[in-house]
Amino acid sequence: MQWHNPLFLIALVILPVLAIAYILQSRRPGPTIHFPSAARLKGLTPSSSRWLRHTPVVLRLAAIGLLIVALARPQQALDEQKVTSEGIDIVIALDISTSMLAEDLKPKNRLEAAKQVAREFIEERTSDRIGLVMFAGESYTWCPLTLDYHVLSQLMDEVEAGTVTDGTGIGKAIATGANRLRSSDAKSKVLILLTDGVNNVDQPDPLTAAGAAGELGIKIYTIGIGTRGMARAPVQTAGGIVYQTVQVEIDEELLRQIAQMTGGQYFRATTTEGLRDIYARIDRLERSEVDVEHIRHYRERFYPFAAFALLLLLVERLLVLTRLRNVAE
Image (cartoon, rainbow, N blue to C red; front, top):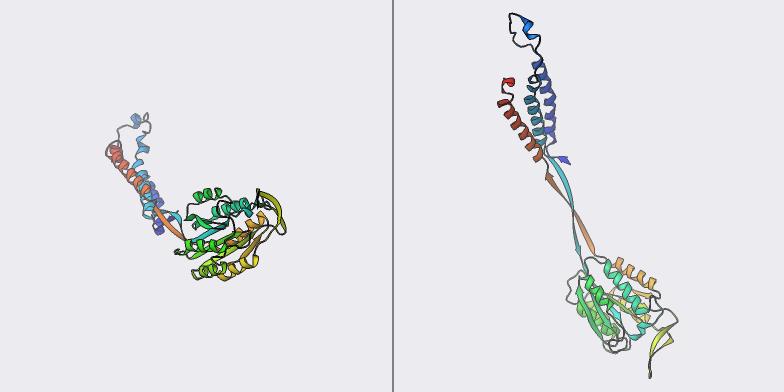
């Protein structure tokens, strides 16, 4: 609460002055009435009118005080924050080759760990559009850029390995993701590429695709996922898919070159917690710029004081003209 015209409050000092002046005046002796004998007045008691005659003055002084307060214009300050942000467009390119079913990351395998951490990353965003690209031997858009994080998380749950031609087409993943970001007018465009293998698809060449993405202003963060050494993973045989312990092979040098060419970074995730930390680092690096503007509004609070003052003056006039007419006179 604050006052728009606080100097008016100084006028409140006139209230005790007026009250003292009225008290002194009321104590002055009035005209003397001569009676032949005072014996007849001995049985009379003071009437309540003696006190009621002060009511109009009390009401008038109270009304003056309230009007002074109203003229000082009490106001309530209402603070408001106006938040504006420049969003980032992000595409997550997720490897769904059968090797992502390797069971070296919790809770179940690499793919489930990648999906879980990606969902957590999505939930932390506020004003960034996010899209989803799936790739193996082929690449396709699973979800275009969107702000509907709930739908995106549901689509992430439906991702399964082995639903397209098997393989690792890193160049195709970059090309698909870049195509989604090409027409974006966001201040920052980011592609997060996660894979557990070595590129084995000739066209397009991963470095060529990365160079084209860099020309479009797209920054690529690459993540190699999988433990170091051996891991239990599904292997295609003549009798079908069987699980064997195989050597983990990730082309870290290629992933590092892709990231450096576009101004991004390469990370290696050997555990689920490590993958979570990587996404947290990317989140800090690619956080939306948020501008907060403080706006203060004022709500006038003098109306009740003015209304009550007018009500007191009205009551005072009614009393003087009716019930206290003779007393006041």
